[in-house]
Length: 483
Image (tube, rainbow, N blue to C red; front, side, top):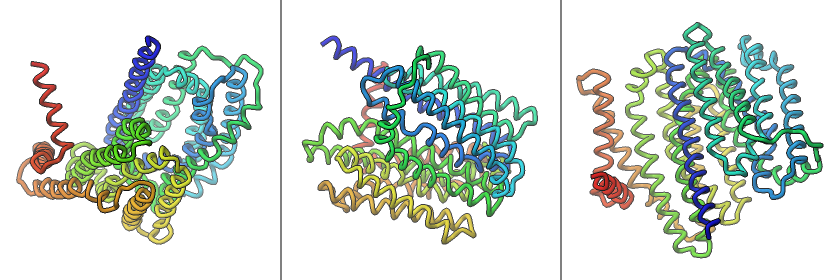
């Protein structure tokens, strides 16, 4: 009994540190990013964004899906860890050498000669990432999320501070390159300090084949998703130049951040509960609907509210030089409002035992997202509208897939999100009208946020939203508890 209690406490402690890692890391990266955006030009970020797809794909290939496979595998030996370490390092050297040779071709494709030296420098981070894969596996198996969190956050803080110092000393885009490399180096060093494992045993390479058989589909899925996520970068960079790529790349980050946080937070809470309810479909559907409504309650006001006041926020925080980012974000935000539902449905299909349907949905979505590149490639704005339409069609396809496996009618799925969507659009309209109030910029932003939040929350509460009432009651209980 004591062991169960200890395991429960250790699990809760680990989950808290894992959550702190995700939120803390993203918050630090967000703050450093805002400061960097204010100090640097769109062109500087465009040069870095041009290389994102190569770094992301290489890191996935080097990792080879081994982390997930080894974490769930029992009886791992030091000889097997040594084999994985040697294999990952070998792959990282191989990919770095390949990218090093291709640096001039990459620069020629983008018509950006600066990328030759810049890419060869940034791609060194792939080597350091490979050196810490085994340490990450071991610490994850030990539920040592505190150590993983400290490594990630320290890397973000130190590399962020160095980046700001370098920017202030005129290093421009090279400062951003140093941030990427230093973050990988510091994280690698700290993980080696925290983990006692060292590659001092004879490697047992037989484990590599076993892991590949398990993780092959995971690698393909990760490669496909990452490729699609970054494929707009090379197309925009090649056709429209580094400055427009800079605007798009940063708009994408702003759109992706809130969607990803809400997706990962709600999914992380919902999946364990939903999996336990697999034998009770009625309760499972009720809980699923509640989670969908909760996601709608959070994501729609955030994305539509941000759309309405993003022009003022951009001028106030990033200055006039970033004003071209405004229409890109406002278009992407519509797609971002529906992204959490897609992530949620994918996970639900997996826990219900339909991984093939999960993969099919991902393929459909990715094909839809790539399509605008071939049809609307001569205009960035139309390309992004195509991206939005692709995401909306993907959401509709999701509804049909979910309806086939559980009794959750399409009209009920739409009914669960429609009130929050409608109220958020109305709230965004009210927030936008505040632009015509003759007051200074900063008071106007504060007024927009207060009016938008007040209108949305009170409308939800008095409109009968169970989610809003539960949240409000918990806040009131917490305040009374303090007194």
